[in-house]
Length: 111
Image 1: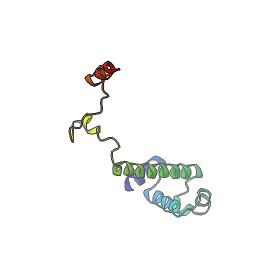
Image 2 (image 1 turned 90 degrees about the horizontal axis):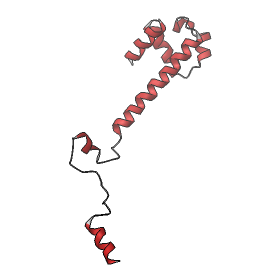
Image 3 (image 1 turned 180 degrees about the horizontal axis):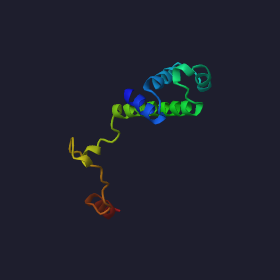
């Protein structure tokens, strides 16, 4: 969270304290027009476009972090994935039998 605050403060050329206050207001479900008009002492006179950009990027980064956590916790869908990375068990991927294999020839001969 601190890294996000520093990044936003540097990008918007504002103090970290103001960015933290805006994030707290957004987390309290305050709307951007409300923050821009009535909470100027908390955000250091940011305009509504900067506030909206901060809110959009904050939402994007939070969604990205939750998605990363979901992916880390997810079980692998393909057990043969380890074969290609040379880690884990030595399960070989499924290879369908060729039509010229011995089982197929004997069946064709019996017809």
